[in-house]
Length: 157
Image (cartoon, rainbow, N blue to C red; front, top):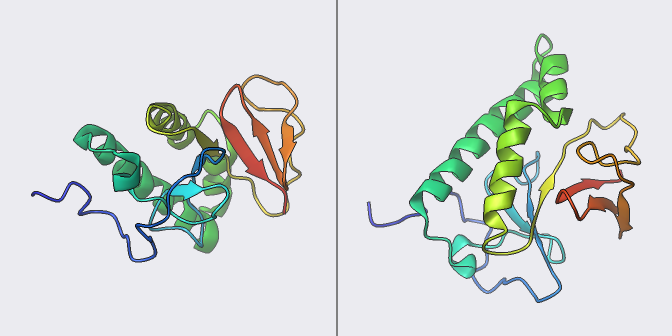
């Protein structure tokens, strides 16, 4: 297939949206952004792979695979009594396989644009004061907490 991006839903993506110099990407999926994982922090909208010059088929496949599994776990968290607690633990645990893969992807995407991994936390959970990877204090940034060293972002509710 000639279209490298055929598996992704770009219906909400504007090709005119590009990252500004002081902006960064967030590898992020939630109940609002389930179809496309690369979000501009400043614009709060998806940034098309073309605008990042991503043509690496293996990377695109890995992003799609991560999206598929992440969405499945998120769906269990949102709407399955029996598996909600398990799914919440998977989404919040920095060492779960889905988050390890997400961090790996963020690291690979840093070759194209500065990228942070959005670490999920449940609505009723307290925002940690320290990064779960390096245990250093998070830096505050406009309602978000980020760790520049580990490239993790978490938001206040």
